[in-house]
Image (tube, rainbow, N blue to C red):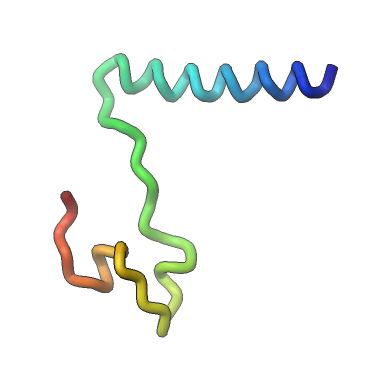
Length: 55
């Protein structure tokens, strides 16, 4: 029963995210944060540290 409840919660979450995209909002993007923002750690994808512009 718990697995069924968990599956329903995930489906509702994904459905809500998809509904937002279908309604014309921009696609979901990840943030450049977390471990990428720690001093002294190089990250090839982080736009802030590598000097690249957002796509």
